[in-house]
Amino acid sequence: MTLADVARKAGLSVSAASMILNGRPDTRLSQDAHDRVHAAASELGYRPNVAARGLKTDKTHTIAFISDVVATTRFASGLIKGALTAAEKAGHVMMVLETGGEPKRETEAIGAVLDRQVDGIVFATMRARELFLPEMAIETPVVMLNATNARFPHAVLPDEYGGGRSAVAVLTDAGFRDGIALLGQSDEKERGLFRSATVAQRVAGIRDAMAENGLTFASESSSWLWEPDEGYEATKKLLARKVRPSAILSMNDRLAFGAYQAALEAGLSIPDDLSIVSFDNDELAAYLRPGLTTVALPHEAMGARAVEMLLNDDPVREALIPMEVVHRDSVLSR
View (cartoon, rainbow, N blue to C red):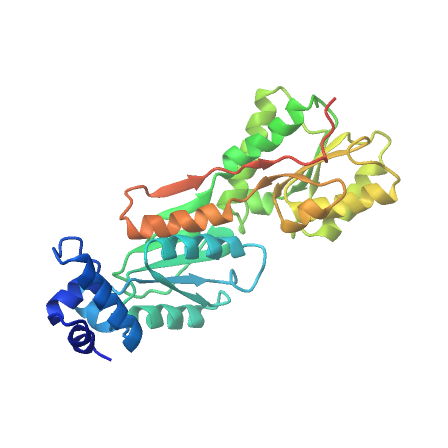
């Protein structure tokens, strides 16, 4: 069915039917005319030719979301959810492509979305890092999400520095002044070859807040992968010391999961014997008993802001999204 068919059935000209279906506010056509056109379009099953409209307006109302493994891992799926919600609100369709971080697939994905003349591209990564993209000509607007790239300065990142300060504040507000252990310290992630800018900011916020309060860590346990088994082993060693820590500041929730298990095996109660505060707000954090107090990664808000920045030609180069503290029951007030 064509626009001419709709206009004929509604008893109006093609231009009048077009203005009504495109939502033109200044048609000066009666409500009855509007009703007849929409009824005719519905009855005939008319769908506008989006490709043809795109040729006229130079807009396809389509954006692309290209990620490494965001779509196939539960941890960062909020990035997609937030982006989808914002795209839908703006009347855009969002294509989601995943590359697994492989350069060849990245090249193919970029070529595919450029061929479809998308209005913009969001490049996203599961873990915040600098993303190296293929040397291809990309003229369409680009926003980096949970990532940075020297060629494309517009980026949306979590405010890790503020998050680090907030984690320390949870403990100091609860009355902790000593006996605090840092779980997951990593020279490589802070300063080495595999440095993560966001991890470095998280640590900087932690260390600055500790210094401002005149505090030092009783111990710092190193970790590379930040997985539960590392948290478990490190916490076992901490709890075997003559002077046990009274609180653990864990660099992420997965390390904290291991710390919970080690405390349980040692016959300790959380938070009565050991308080724990962490980062990320993994969905499992709420199901621990007691629930884990953690500083949340604002993935949905980040995804939404990336799309808004993409479509609104936002002058902001680097948007830092606040990390909220999710208070549960793993920290004892002294």
